[in-house]
Image (cartoon, rainbow, N blue to C red; front, side):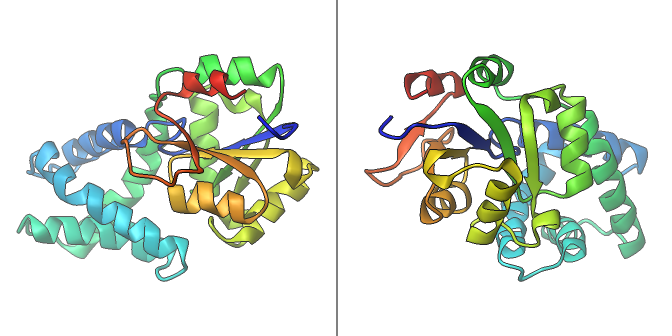
Length: 228
C-alpha cells in the first residue's frame, strides 16, 4: 500500500462477528422461551431489512436506542399479521439483547487474519453497536485480546460515518490518521466515513455490492493479506 500503515481499525458486526447467523440463533432461543408461534425463516425475511432500516436511522440520530429495539420487532410482527402485545415485545427485545452475545460465530478467517495482522499492526475496533453488548461479543468470541482499543458510539457520543467517532478512536489509539486503515462492511459508515476523515479504507464486500472504482475491496477476510 502507498501509506505506511501502523494501526488497523475493524468494524465488528457483519465484518468479524457474523451478526445474521448469531441473531437468528438468538431469536430461535427467545421465541422458544416466550412461545412465539412464528416460523423463524419467515420472521427473518421481514425483520432483516427492517433492522437495517432502523440502524440507518439510528446512525443519523433519527431514532433512539429504545425506539430501534422496539420498532424493528413491532414492524416485523405487524407485517406478518402476528398478534402480540407491547409487553411481550419489550420482553423479547430485552431477552434478544441478552442472548445475542452468547452465540459467537465469526466470519471465516477471522481468527487467522487477526493473528496474522496483530504481529504487524496495532488493531482496534470502531463500532456503532452498544457498549455492553459489543464488549460481551468480543469476550465471548475470544478475540478481545487482539484489540488495543475498542471505540463504540455510546462512549464517543456520535456514530459512524460522523468524523468525530473516527477522531475519538484516533485519540484513543494515539495514532496518526495518515497511518490508519479502516475495514468494514458498510460502504457509507465504514469506508466513506473513514476516507472522509483521512484514513485509508478497505471494503469488506461480502455481498458483492456495487462500489466505487477507487475503493479497495475484499470478499473474504484472508484476502486482506494481499494488501497487508
